[in-house]
Amino acid sequence: MPRFHDLTVTAIDKTIRDAVVVTLRPPEGADFAFRPGQYLTFRRDFDGQEIRRTYSICAGADDGLLQVGIKRVEGGAFSTFANEGLRVGDRLAAMPPMGQFIVATDPGAAHRYLAFAGGSGITPILSILRTVLAREPKSRVTLIYANRGLGSIMFREEIEDLKNLHMGRLRVIHVLEHDAQEIELFTGRLTEEKCAELFARWVDVAGIDLALVCGPEPMMQSVSAALATAGVEPSRIRIERFTSAAQSGRLARPVPSQAAAAREGETRLSVTLDGATRTIEVPAGMTVLEAALAADIDVPFACRAGVCSTCRCKVTEGEVEMAANHALEDYEVAQGYRLSCQSFPLTARVAVDYDQ
Ligand code: FES
Image (cartoon, rainbow, N blue to C red; front, side, top):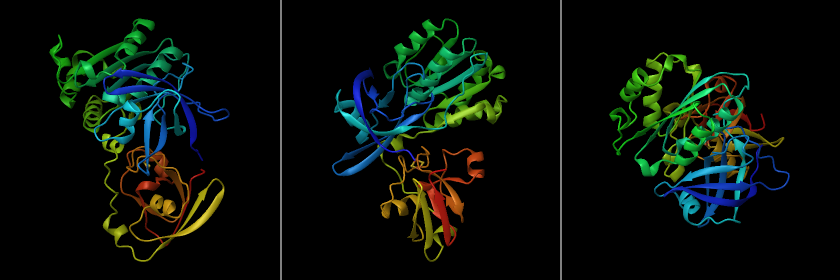
């Protein structure tokens, strides 16, 4: 089970006015090796209240750096602190890298990747692009990158550098909501219709091996719909969700279905963590995560919104119902994995295992 470690901040670079790239050095002996596309979960106290946030790693797997991109979101305590209060030499508590938005590279592959990023959704995509371009010399990537305007493009220079370093293998289309561009199609929001036009005139979507999508929910829905209409099978689409609501901390508590809410009596819940099992009582209407934390069991979590999958556990007995799931794939659910922050017990006995 992943644990928090104190990482030292070794550099802070402004990439745009309201975003920073933070370079971190893990402590001796802590394993922070990552796969491109993964994220770190941070923990920090603000006025006595613990806040956890996840931020994607933006460095490539071979860059020899551990770096995350943090964009300030309105009302976001952690992102504001990172942008304004964080200093080189400070320590930040973080869990080792996690996440399934990853691409397995193959040096002999000649793949065609099509990546869509919206705003700070570029962070995991950039890590993947850097790694793929370095490790697969025959692969090519098209990046469609949506932003409000020129001033809000994170990593603009780094992307240009990547283009120059891997001549002819990285094509970038900037779609800007407000700033007019020479080609009219590249101005405006990245809607389903705009994607369809891009596919018709600029991007040959039929030949792609893998599509990667990360950005705000409406953009991801539009891109997914356009890819489906263009005939790209779901197995060739990889989506990373993170919500600005999850980052800012303005989250609604998960709501149980009527069946879960109407359950009478308590559930006996067994929680296995780090090889030890404890059994606790869970009143109806309480999630597995809430019950475990209330019993002082140090189970992992971050967003509490069904987005990050940090709270993933395996249900080994009984049944639970997830109020939301934006993180687990169907095959993981079929194997019994659930998001404990979203799971309401449905049976009198439930056992969950965080070690599997
Ligand atoms: Fe993020 Fe549960 S804590 S999905």
